[in-house]
Length: 519
Image (cartoon, rainbow, N blue to C red):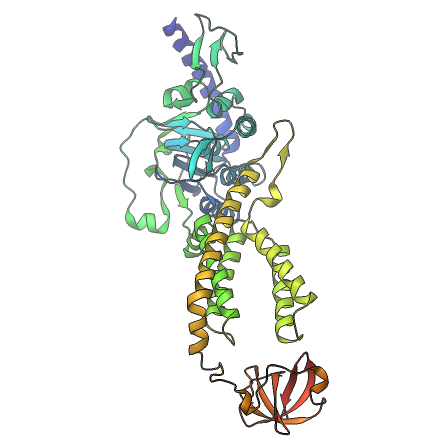
């Protein structure tokens, strides 16, 4: 029976191979006279996780190929998986490249396409594999309290349906994709068809078991070919080595790729690999887009903002804070988490805060509105996935965007807690010393015998237009002497040194607002 079964699959594979040849001819159009450029993107070196940095790399690579169209793109996979949210965005971009831009993607599983890697493989029109390839084990995991746990049945159900849809897109069996996600699936081949057994249904002696209950489906190379998951099997071959110079330039003859040992690709004349080479900007964006780095940048922004508020003028803390904010914005735009709306809200908020601090006396509705706009914009920027969140009422669960949003929310909350602790330490020990050492902070005691008093009622203050002399530098607050009495005063503009004449231009509480007569 077993021999008969494999003979049947051999026949099916032969017939399918003829269909594959027609499909390749139909979708991969090459110039019979050459040259023929072939794109190349690579995800993973066995240990690499799929994340937001991977999305930046793939997005920029596909943008490059949209401008410089190849006849097709090789997506080389060797990854244990990673973030579902990032994988979904990459998956959608791969399908768009094929359908909208008519550049088919040929997946080359060079060992592993596990978890989110399996999703990417399913998102390619063709899947080619090596002898030791593996694909599957895509059950979603959640980070809870620093521990990795299996996601709930509700989350699992949503991901399972998503896998099935992506497998069906290129006419692959959705049941096999679902079994990669759900360990409760029992699949068998019965009467030449792949079927799912129900809970109490028994396995027949003539059934060929694909996967049993309690075990996630992971397929080896032979099983992928037999079950129609993979299209092209590539035997081990000795190839010409790609030189270091060719790797650096991202261009080498296509015959140095194992895929071009397959007959259809062998016949493509003058084929050359044009591998996308990420520049320093792409690498930088990929780095700052990661949750760890963006959280560190937000922490630096918090500390710098606090230090700048507690030191007069605009100095090093402000510059560092602006640089951190700039990097956060770059990372968010790189992964398409932020839009111009968030940037406009942030700039409007900062503008209102600056207006309140430097133009409008006191702190009122303008400053409060500025803070609200700034915090709202930063929250939207630091929590990507918010706009893509959807809730499935049938499964009572969020989609992958929602799961990623809450994961980033945990990162942000943790950063806020750490930031508050650091700010408390700074407020207790460091900031007072900085104030004491600052050259623009007035030193010495203001003794009552010398005319210094705690404050005066508004009726006791001189009238607007009265002229006085600065007795302690206004930076921007200090003391002014008028007709032998000393008063608290605030400069309306620049710092005013001791001995300069000023005139009262306004009164706020027990303080006078003054400006130097020369201005």
